[in-house]
Each structure stands twice: as structure tokens, then as C-alpha cells.
Amino acid sequence: MRKKIVAANWKMNLTLHEGADLVNELFKGMPTLTESKIVVIAPPYVNLHQTSSQLAGMMNVHLGAQNCHHEAAGAYTGEISAAMLQSAEVAYVIVGHSERREYCKEDDATIAKKVNQALAHGLNVIFCCGEPLEIRDADTQNQYVESQIKAGLFHLGEERLDNIVIAYEPIWAIGTGRTASTTQAQDMHKHIRSVIAAQYDAHVADAMPILYGGSCKPSNAAELFACADVDGGLIGGASLKAGEFLGIIEAMVAAN
Ligand code: PEP
Image (cartoon, rainbow, N blue to C red):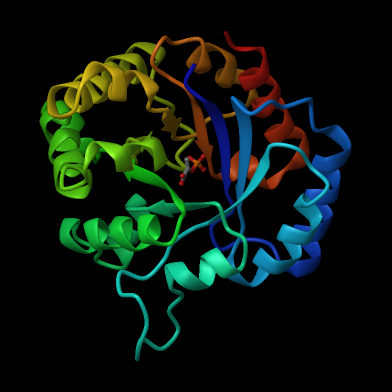
């Protein structure tokens, strides 16, 4: 049975105190999770240590990071390596988020190296892909997302795919309040699964969690998570408020 995952991406939000308060609130309201229905919380780097201690008492809630560097170590002022994340007890790392692709000019080759660094240090990768609005308007989103997946993941052997989660995040839906329809989400998730099946095999594709991201909130989470190929969500804005994030987690727990 493939995992269902709701992952919080706090982005560049919340101070240490605010982050601690949010995790305390989540702790109070967290529904019962299992090994196959899990939560990931990816705070800013400075919060990792504190959040790790807070998560110690929470079953099936894992620590995530929002990025890692593409080299193992060295003279990269201000950067954080996958080995550092591993030593901070991080279990998941977000790679290839559209904000990093755009604002930090991360290209496919760099993202593929980050995937390698993360896997080499025992981290699970939440690999983000998704098209801008002009690609959606031109109806070429399937080819666009397929090429991101090929460039970022297809150099990996099948055995590494166990540690990969894909997050489909249409850029036009991120932080805009505009969510993909259930048909748009399901069609793309099904396409992604077929792309993985064609390169690897149906078994690998079937086991891979594919998350939706883009203005997901309690009011639309249940219908998105009811789609056959949507295995949860990567949540930005709504992960910053305990009540909203818990509502989304509850939708994942209730989904078949
Ligand atoms: C994201 O940036 O990963 C995201 C899904 O953001 P939001 O939920 O705010 O659209």
C-alpha cells in the first residue's frame, strides 16, 4: 500500500518562538497517524533542531528541510549540505521547488545533483515539478512536467525510487488561491505515474506517493485526496495555521 503524506512547507515564515507554538498546537490536535499515513514538517533551517525535539513525542510525524546544497561540502557560504541535514535528524528534503527554480535559478542539472546528495545521505526526497501558466494555457503541461521528471530522476536506479516522493505543484496555483480542479490534478498525477511506469515498471509507479501542491486548504483537501492518484499534499500557506493544517491532515487520514 503506498503512503499518503501531508507535508508542510513553512517557506521563509515563522520565528523560533512562532514555530514552537505552531508545533505545540499541532501536537494537541494531531489525529492518529500510521506508517502509511504520515505528516512531514519542513520549517526553516534554524528551526530544525527545535522542531526535531518537539517531534520526538509525535508518532509518524517526520522532520523535513526545504532545500539542500548540490555539493557534498566546501566553500559555499550560507549553504547547508545533505550530510548536515542527516545529522540534524531530517528525514525528508524538498528539492526543485518552483520558488527555488525561479528565484535561485536552480536548473534541472543542479536539481538532479541535489537529489543525489540527498539520497546519498539517507534522506527521502520530495521532488517538486509543475508548469507555469503559459504552459498550461498552451496545453503542453504533460510534456513540460515529464521533462522535469526525466531530468531530475531518470538517472536513478529503480532501487532508489523507494525514497522518492513526487509533488506536482502547478505554479499558477501556488500561493494564488487558485487550486487545480480535481480533474486537472488527477489527470496530471495519472500522467506522472505512467511516465514512471514507462521508465521503470508498474510496480515502482504504483508504490510512489504523488502529492498535490497549490492552494490546498481544508475546504478542498478532501476532494483532491479522493482522486485515485493523489496521495496527499505539499502545503504552503495553510501549513502556517494549526487549525487549517490539521484540517488538511484529517482529510488525508479520512481518505481511502
Ligand atoms: C508550495 O509552495 O509548496 C505550496 C503548495 O504553497 P501554497 O499551499 O501556499 O499554494
